[in-house]
Length: 142
Image (cartoon, rainbow, N blue to C red; front, side, top):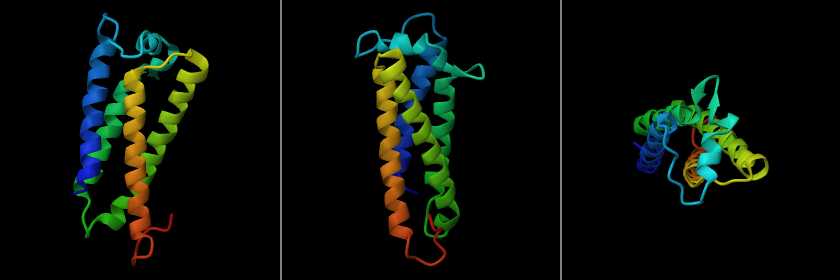
C-alpha cells in the first residue's frame, strides 16, 4: 500500500463528496474565496454529460485509492502504468478547470483549488514512483 497516495485519495474523496452533496443542494456552497464557489457551481462547467463534476472527482479519488491500496513490490509493475494514466488524466482535467476559473469565470472556488492541489500532490508522488522504478527490471518505460 502506498500510504501517501491513499491519504491523498481519502482527502480528495471527502472533498469531492462534500462538493457533490453541495452541488445537489439548493443552498450555495460556503466559500473561503467569496462568491467563486457559487460562480463555479452555477457555471456550465459544473457538469459534463449531465453528471456533476464532483462525481467525476469521486471516481478519480476512488480509483486512486484502489490503485494505491494495491501497490506493493509484487504489483507495482502492473499498477504503475495505470497510476500514471489516472493521475495524468486527473492533472489534465484539473489544469483545464483551473484555467476556466482563472480566465473564463474569473472567480476562484476554494474547494476546487484544494482539489487541484491534491491532484498536484498525487502527481508529484506518482512522478517519484516512476523515477524510483525507472531503472529496475520490468519497470514501465515512461
